[in-house]
Image (cartoon, rainbow, N blue to C red; front, side, top):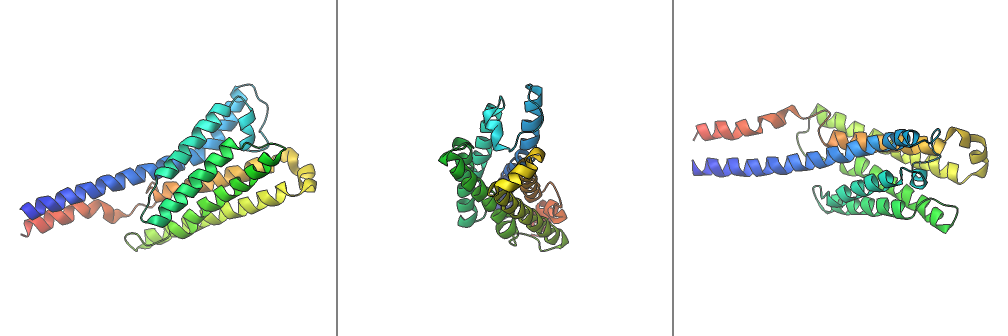
Length: 228
């Protein structure tokens, strides 16, 4: 009986840790998806017209506090995220650092703007690394749902990479900016990348394709205890 109680206590501790990590991942995912929507709608409510050229350009609008607050919140969650080993922790710290650099080195026509573009690209590439290489590792039941989740992670990661490359090409071509700036392609590329980022983290947080077997973990201890 004592061994059974110890097993139940350990299981409860593990479940508490899992729930904490799942909540953290879901929070990061929700912030990533809602961030551009909040900025765009809030800007219109504040009296702005249309869509801004980029997500970062909302720093120079009445939505500045929201932009800084949400970005710093995401950075804090990324710093807090430790994952399964040192690779997760290091990648989370880098992503958080790049995110803070994006916020506190705002877009401009000076050298600060150039650094802003570089760290923004690094931020999205780091998030893509999370999805493609870290989230896809085997960390549970190797079943169809896990394989489906891995496909989602990779698709989201590749979308982030593609959006980052296209944004870099656009920002490096004055001709493209002259032709297409009216459509705000940078804003939409950043928005799509953030949605892919958020969708990937929501999937990792088990809001999608959850392992059915996870719900039976407590029963294993119950039946093993009855068998003793």
